[in-house]
Length: 208
Image 1: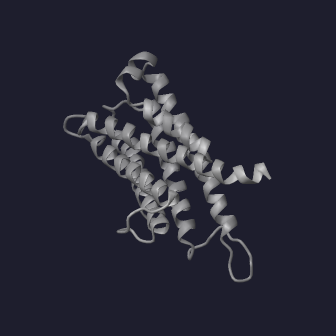
Image 2 (image 1 turned 60 degrees about the horizontal axis):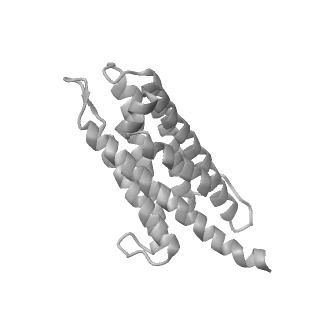
Image 3 (image 1 turned 60 degrees about the vertical axis):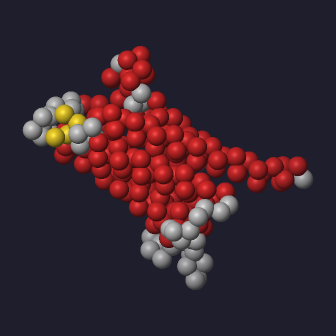
């Protein structure tokens, strides 16, 4: 899961960089975004599966629907958000920015995905830190804080990417691109921290 999140984050990190776009061209750049979203969805699916397996009712049964499990909500909302990014990045391959359908087909799912990520990040941080207003203590809370920062950056990116109907141009393309890279960098750091944490946990068992 950590590796998949890291690969997806790397795609979203380099995709908005102008030098990378000039190097590979818009079509290949669009493919990088779409591939990154697939890695996000795959990783989110594994995380949701983990929360489902960990959550049990009083009889010991596991259910795909666990409305009383905050960890399940965080994973499920994040998973839905990745699906919106699948739509965004795929439609971004086929819709020009000056298309009259851009806002409906590209920007809206992008905004919905960012909101889902933000909600998921808030829930995850609250769980890991013991409350939204608490400072992060411990690796889990620190990872959650880094990811929440990434979610906020993605949300700002979505605002900047809004296409103004009157001008058929993005509200702030530079803000959209920079915040996408910043958010992706935060997700990459969080994924690498997760990998390091899991490696440390496995090390004693391997040495036995």
